[in-house]
Figure 1 (cartoon, rainbow, N blue to C red):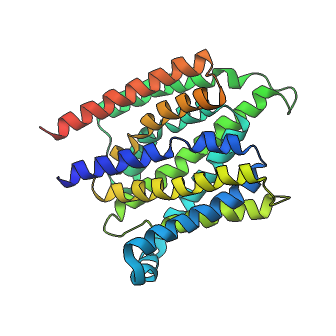
Figure 2 (cartoon, one colour):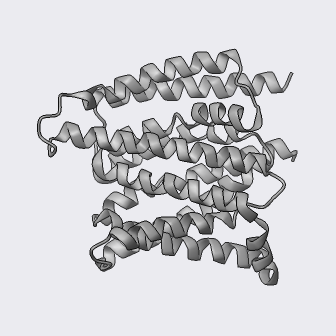
Length: 293
């Protein structure tokens, strides 16, 4: 198996492991910051367990090797994680996942700025189509705001938080690719600490019912496995290719939300989401085809 295929498979399984995450957060049905506090703790413990199982007595050495770039990667991905969870609390999972699925385009732009990987013409065309799809998804969020408690206002906040999430995550992807010679899986512990710290500062109570705690526990473990894989993938393939798998998570995530918690997507979410996902699929297919020539 060549390195490129290995990277693709690692990214694929990483994104698939993320699929249940939004549903688990919604099923926990608890205060956002309480969820963040416990999520960060279980996430950190999961990554530590993976590192220890892999490196044993060299675990501390791997933690130390990430250096300042690893701390930045952890901080940025942590911010992305916090805003993602907050977005789910304000708007539908479908809308959040569709917005998150634009990550490949965001990563392409940021990678151009950071590591001088300039997007091709077909990437720019894809971006314009995707912007149209996102406009369709979000068009109901731009209603006139009269009351801060209005549903439209909350959806707009959720959509904005999702945008912040993909920008922070995009920088994290690009930096991981830039420092691909370093194992950045330990940086996910920094990510977890950021998530837990935000919960610690803003939560009014750390109590979770047993069922909620179990949902958060499972989510933290899956998160540790998923982001360990996603962090490893850029060592073998470009960051933008890793991000190209996010639309797959969007499809599975929306379907799981529909099937498990009966959160039926709106017609605008389905139409806009279809435009985004189909565009990203053909972008990934065409770019992969060019690389094989």
